Image (cartoon, rainbow, N blue to C red; front, side):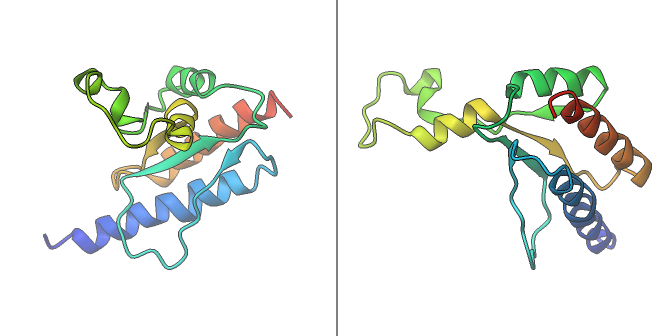
Length: 135
């Protein structure tokens, strides 16, 4: 518990100072980025949600990043009512358009406190390399 403040600070730094600022500097309209001014939480991951203007799919970007040893995860469950355990249930909301959009076009990269600045720079370089192919 004595290192909790260090872990939280590192996660925030990984999220804000490097990943968010690096992607906002790409000067594209390929992403919806979640800025978190004055955040007081410890982000587990950095969300990447592709905009409608992105000329590539989330699957393409994920495959590229994973080929470069940058591991990603889809958002937990996506649209939970599309999980097999819910297929025979009825719901008030039939069209969860935004939930489906995020499920199909979003993923995240971890902000683990063990990620070094060198690792983050590599991640940023690989993301930039991928984006340059489409600019």
